[in-house]
Length: 64
Image (cartoon, rainbow, N blue to C red):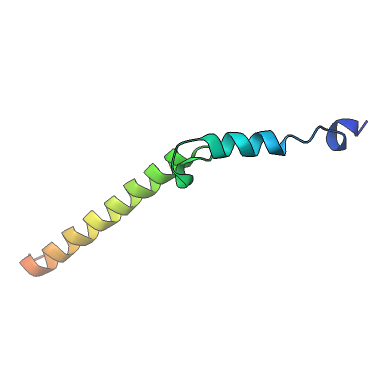
């Protein structure tokens, strides 16, 4: 019943060769890495723009 779990062939060598043969940079090789990088970039950009806008409003001295 559990043979399918612990009697599987070892495919680590093939997987390692495939990973090392990939020409992409290391931080983009994994699954869904591009999505994670883009989501982080969007969040970072939104935060930076919000900070710049807040500083601009403080300097401008806009009355409430």
